[in-house]
Image 1: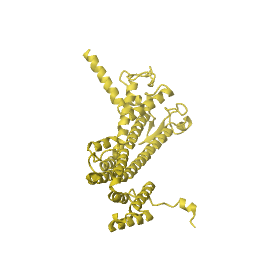
Image 2: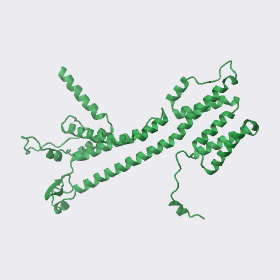
Image 3: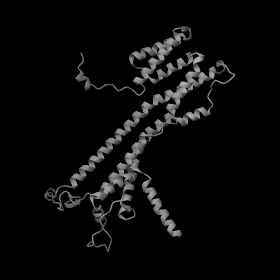
Image 4: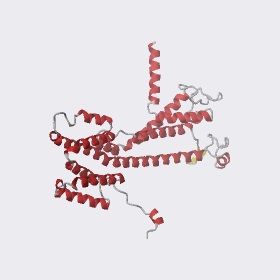
Amino acid sequence: MSNPFANLFTRRKRPSADTLPPQGLIYFDHLYAEYESLTVDHPEIASEKVRTLVSELLAKRKDKTLSWKDLYTFDLILAQLSPIGKLSRKVWSLRSRYRDVAGTKEYDAYLASKPPDWSPGKTAEDKEDELRADIEHLLGELYLRYAIVPVRERIRDRIAKRVALGTLFWLTLAVMFTLLVNRPEEEVRAKGGSPSGKFSPSSTLVVKVRGEEIEVRAATLTVVIFVGAMGGLVSMQQRYHSLPEDGDQIQNVSELIQGWLNIFLPSISGAIFAVILYLLVLAGLLQGGLFPKMIEVPGNVDTRYGVNFLYFLREANPASRTDFAKLLVWSFISGFAERFIPDTLSRFIARKDSNVTT
């Protein structure tokens, strides 16, 4: 007697993408029942070769090794064995399934090709060959999608897992860096840093490089870049799962396999757009209740010779916690909505051009 607890830790062999899922096995049983109903009263319609092939399919069914190819073969056999009187209903059923699977656009293109149908003044025999050919065509289109969908979904899941692991890695790194830099005052003083308030963004991490102490601060711009990159990554991940499923199925899967690295490109553009948004807010070009307010430069700072870049990075912060939250939200939006920053810049350019012409 097998141990049920041991089965929990036993690694099961993962079925291949071509293996029939449970719903495929149920459909096979349905087809076999149809085959029996056709041959029980008229055994002569099935040749010896067909009977041998069906026996092989039944053996695979018992061994649970049936594939989509086997199911497609069985459906083609039934299409050839079906009597003339059932062809019209079989075509209607397959067309309905094809419309649901392929979508309206592809189905309309199929109807535009003027598929065969019963016409007034013509007998069933006049259209038999054309209808059987149309049935084979529809079965081919249907089973191509049935077989490719599991492959496509596995590729998507694999890519989603890679992206999730990459996102988790960088998120953990960002959290560790933030906690390391923004430490309590007592710990900063013990490490040689300059105390400036308990657990504040201006707390410093002192790093020694060649005997020199360098203060590392958690700049707001660092967080903005990270949030913008995450916005771009989330946007691309959602679009990746909603890719169109019409068109050439094999080509779609090939593009999915070959172009999965492109999923990381929007994170780069999202980070750049978040920086541009940050500068637009600092420059006062984006103002209003929805946008954050930034801290003004103190009056005692000497700006006659410009502002030091490191000082700019360190002191260009939101005025309050609410403004900081707004900045993070807009940073994510700038990465998530890839047209937000380009459209904003385009409006600035159009406004400038209109002012020049007037």
